[in-house]
Each structure stands twice: as structure tokens, then as C-alpha cells.
Amino acid sequence: MSKNQTKRGEMKRVLIEASTVMLGLFLFAVTLGETNRLKKSAIEKDLQIEKLSKAISLKFKAKPERDQRSLEERMDSLQEAWESLKADFNKTKISKSIDNLVKESTFQMLGNFKNTKHFFSENKKELLELKKDIAKQKKENKNLLDRLIMENRPKDEMIKKMLSPTVQISGEENVGSGTVIYSSNSPNTNKGTYILTAYHVIRNINSENPREKNHRYTITTFGLDGKRREHVSVLVGYKKSLDVALLKLVGNEIIDEVAGLSDLKDLEDIKIWTNVFAIGCPLGNDPIPTGGFVASQNSKLGKVNYWMINAPTYFGNSGGGVYSAKTLKLIGVFSKIYTHGKIRPVVISHMGLIVPLAPIYKWFRKTGNDFLIPH
Image (cartoon, rainbow, N blue to C red):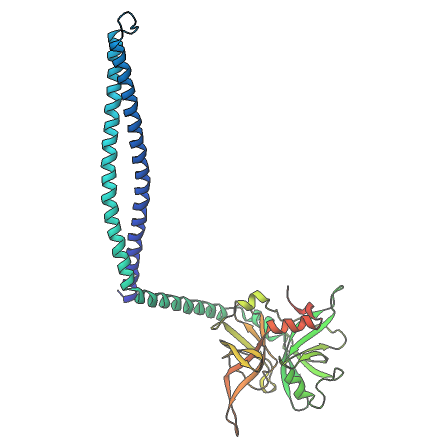
């Protein structure tokens, strides 16, 4: 038997003893109440007998001509009083016996409780370590379960929800990635197709005037049929400090494959160790998925708080989507990757930074694009 199993057994025994103590105290309280009630009843009976005795004494002293009751009747009354007195005496005797028994049991249970308290005091450190081990094992089991779910998802579903909404944004010498987050031509809706990407992707493609909204950006989509299709888009807005930008296809063109967006509650559930997928077009390739988990949620650069992921990424992943492996919904936009060295920087592919969707949603609200936020 392992050390942890032995400790769990000891903890179980201690908890059972503590429960027994609490039950005994409860029974003691109930019995004590019943004992007091019986004592009170006995006192009342004594008073009744005393009153009856006085009445009988007066009857014996009364004159025969005034006595309406026969001697037999008086004897019957005395007999009834005696039987009642004897019964109450027996009840009082039993009550005292129960009282003594409960007191003895209580003293014994209090002794057990002191022993239990002493056990917890002596083993507090080990119990806390055991609690940490259990929490760690629980987290590892959850991660294993999430990974099993991730590995056994239907591949068609993963392609449709993550690969197909991924687009390539290209210029003369630069390439980046983006994600289709909205596409609709239904009445009473904001018509058109919107693409979320990184601001520096737009800046690198149109380096002369990245803020120009009339500049045309070439967007390549990859449908479920595997065919590449080119589209034209314009810049709708950007936020340089967040490194995010929003494009819209020209002519209200509609695309079928749209990424699902995590709402704020989903984003709150994302923690360190949460499994994720990073989807992008590194080095101009078609969309490529890589897997990893959230390694940090407090990687600050300037005033922006990034999340770090260890899913392998490279140049060209910028602007691409990062998804929860559990829900297959977008949780952020890939922004930066760590490099080491100044003369010949080496890419650290497992240290990528993403902009989580929560601050992007705030930007959407301020710019009148709140229809893009899931409700």
C-alpha cells in the first residue's frame, strides 16, 4: 500500500471518529433534555401526592357524619397515589441511569476528539502536502481527459471550425494570417465578411501608409474542398497598441466557414495548462495547425497583457487564430514570437504571445463593431 493510500485511510478513520463525536454530543443533548423533563414531572408528582396526603389527612380528621366517602374509597385513593408515586420513582431512577451513561460516553468521546485534534495538529503539514498532491493529480487527470477528447475529435469538425476560417493575407514581400469571424447577408444584419488579424501584418504589407483605408489587401481562403480562392479586402479599423486590425471583403462577399468566438465566460475558463491549437500560414504555407497549452496569462509588453502559448509557431503565424482545444472556439489572435540573440536572432517557436479576445471585444464596442461580439 502506498504512502498516500495509507494517509487517506488514516484520514478516513479520523473523520469517522469525528463524526461519532458529533453524533454522541447530539444524543447527549437530546437525552439531557428528556432527563430534565422527567425530573420536572417527578417534582410535579411529589407536589400532587403531598396535596393528596393533606386532603386524606383532613378527611380522616373530619367528623363521621360529614364524611361522604367510605373507608374503601379512601383506601383506593391511597393505593392509586402510591402506584403513581412508585411509577414516577422508577422513571426518575431510569433517567438518572441514562444520565450517568451519557456522561460517561460523552467523556469518552471528548477524549477521542482531543486525540483527533492532536492527530491533525501533528500531521497538519503532511495533510496539506497530501491535499496538494490530490489537487495536482486532479489537474493532470483533467488535462489527460482534455487531450483524449482533443485527439479523438472528428477531423472533419476540426477542419471546418479552425482550418477553413483561416485566411492568408499577402503583399509583395510579406505574408500573414487572419481569421474570418463574421459573414452574413441576412436582412436586418450587418452585411459582409469581416477578418480579424494583427496590425503589424497590415503595416508590413502596406508599409508606406498602413493607415490607408482604401488600400486593397489580397485575402486567400481555403475551402472545405481544398481549393484556394482569392478575395479583395479593405481596412475597417485597427488598434496599434493591441496589435489588432479588422478587414472587410469588398462587395459584401459571403464566406461559409466562420470561426466560433469564445464569449467572456468561456474566456474566464481559460487557465494555465488549458490545451490550445494555433492555426496560421507560416512562411506562406496553407493553414497549419499546431497544438500546445497556455503557458502564461501575465506576459506584459508595455501596457498590453499577452498570453503565452507553447504551441510551435513561426513567421507567418502572425494574425492567425488560437483556439480552445475543448470548445474549438477562438480565444485570441497570434501576435508575437520570442527570439534570442541580436546579430542572428533564433526563433523560440514554443514561446508565442497572443492577444486574448477580451480586450479586443472592448475595442469592438468603442468602434461600433459590437455586432461582432458573441451574445
